[in-house]
Image (cartoon, rainbow, N blue to C red; front, side, top):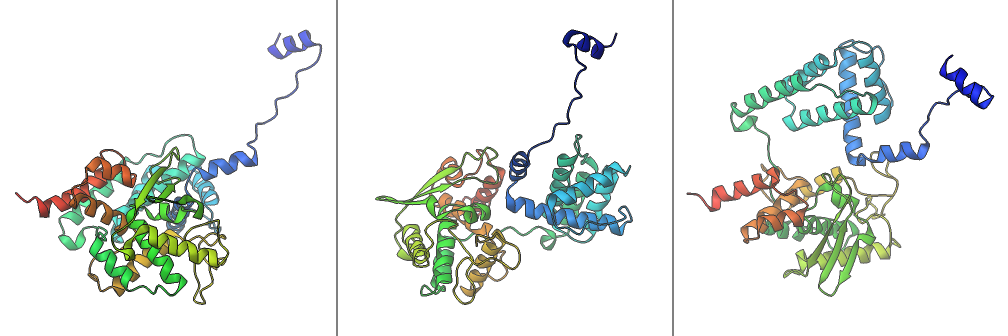
Length: 360
């Protein structure tokens, strides 16, 4: 007698067939939001380029046209399920990126995007020994080809550079007031681009001692524990985080914006937070790419070194550089900027300073 017959004998009824388990829409939404939107957007582009390359290699009959991470991940799953050797395909793709002269960091992100899509659709981890071996060889080739072949590091925005940058911005326009607040707060918080653009108006609270800022989540903050920062009054009003934040919040209030994103788009007519025609969210929030463009554009207008790599990361690196130069403890710098204890990235910034200041 089978177990089903036993169940039927005990209950007097035939057992009902088990219904398939289907995830609810809310569950799908939370799973989707585990990945930050900026990362999802970057990974989507990486996946699209990989699948386009697969199409050129005749590994795919049809390349998806929808610009959506989940759709592209499903196409990747179909490619791998079709019997293709995923390890060899990805290894050859890394070789093609290296031959095209892509930056090692760009190749690293492409690998991360492919691995993330693979995890989203398959049980087994994607083997990356071959791709990473090709990438290591490429890094070695770059290192031995002279300074021109090495990756350019973001130039640090020092206090002197920050003062020069804010001095060329027009404080009589909403865009000028916003850009000053962006530069000063980005520096004072040692913020990543994603942290800066994720700030909401309600994350800023004025206190008798200055400005209290809540940074809700960060790139390396997997559990979204967040961090807080207390920014004191500055000596120079032009680069005082309290003054510049107050000026920008007043501008926002004049445009009837007291909630929502702190940093918003401004069109050429001075209108705030309109729905974008291209990349960007409907609430008018500034993108990380826009932050990078503002930093680079303002550095150029201020006459800073045109050969240096000015980017959104320049503010974060500048904070670490200036704090260490003034004698701040390395652990306090890490805690203030949200670096992990023992961060190799932070130590890299410090080594660059030590080579100049503590040269044996």
